[in-house]
Amino acid sequence: MAVSRKKAAEKAEISTNQNIKDIIIQALMEKLGRDIVDIDMKGMDNVIFDDFIVCTATSKPHAETLCDYVRELAWKVAHQKPYFVEGLENKEWIILDFFNVIVHIFLQETRDFYNLENLWSDAEITRF
Image (cartoon, rainbow, N blue to C red; front, side, top):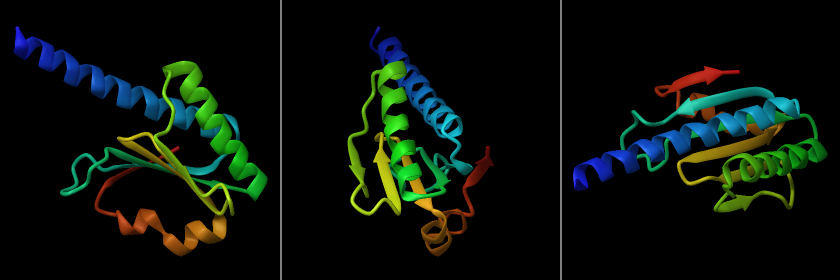
């Protein structure tokens, strides 16, 4: 019986992670985030999360709108809030931590400078 519960819990966690990832991508697309990318980290060694989702905002107000809408839709659809949000002060790089899914909302200059896709180029990258 314990094995079935464990498998059910693992299945629910995978489903929840996939669901929150899809919700985040949907939110970013609906508010016109640019160059949305999912970096799948599940196959990487020594990484404690499953996905990086990266997108570009056209301005600081747009970055804030993207962040707010991701938070709103995640709560409305999946009853999940990010554990941590950073970057709202300067709005050049906003990070939302949903535990297994990390969201990065960049202004173009900042995204070009940090170039996360190149840093994690050995991971599977999906563009939306």
